[in-house]
Image (tube, rainbow, N blue to C red; front, side, top):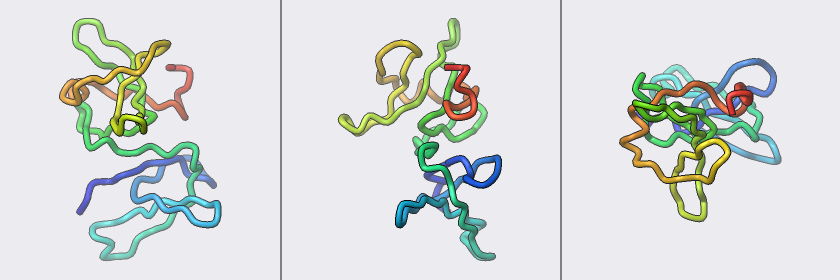
Length: 125
């Protein structure tokens, strides 16, 4: 089974959907697969502004890192960053709060920890 590629907040209730993103006629859904969709898959309508793309990296707890996630990176003096996608450079970046985006080696991300996201935990920003 492929890794989950997107996450987004559910439109009609609290929580998040994880899966494959689809858009049609101005509405957005995530197809949430079970194991190979053997028992069927569910479609969840989502809030499109909250879509986060999976970076193909996990934090030190094994949690998938998505755009919009807020992380603590660094060992001695951890710094708060938000994960973003830079379309002009076709790369994921970590932005220090209040500063420009910077490219941090993705191997550095795996030692960090996700502490929230910009949609639920904006006060962390």
